[in-house]
Length: 226
DNA sequence: GCGACAG
DNA sequence: ATCTTGTCGC
Image (cartoon, rainbow, N blue to C red):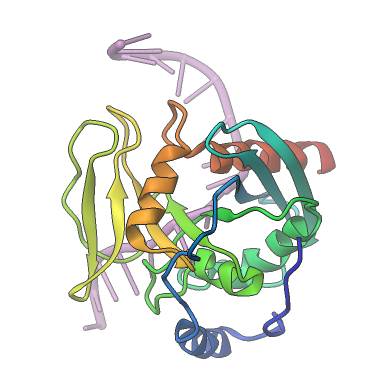
């Protein structure tokens, strides 16, 4: 799929935080009027502890049927350390390369990590959204910032994620008896639509199918290429 | 200074 | 994220 390079990735942590504060102002949270969601894509990264490489996977599904359409992968050496709040500077490059290999341009991209539920409002989902100029949303397994009360036990139950007096995301129960996930808009999507899409992509597992499959594929890729 | 901290 | 076996429960 097409995309553009907003900025170079070779940067120091201090500069990365400064860049995030600038990128935050470019985010938009209105879903493109008239856009029909026919293809959703899940992305994730796997890594080894011994080697220094990152393995990315992007898996596209039809929507709302959720049938596999296409998958792409990429492998790159890690050029940035894992620093809470700066995840996109570590995983962004390899994820964008995998996405670039897709023949189909997905209407929405579900990312493993936060969107606006981030210290400066620019989690990896938001960052990728700016590069792709496409709707993106974050699906995180644990919280980065914010406070919340646990959502009800039934699938679909939600609870607001509040950070510094602002609702930055939604805690969503996707499966009974299992820990909830943290959904937040990335770019070009509103909070309610983000939750609606994430829930519509769930197939009996805790994680939305596109993200779950991307997770499995990136893991498989690492085992084979490592 | 102390505690928190996506993947 | 990754390192790791078994174990509890539907």
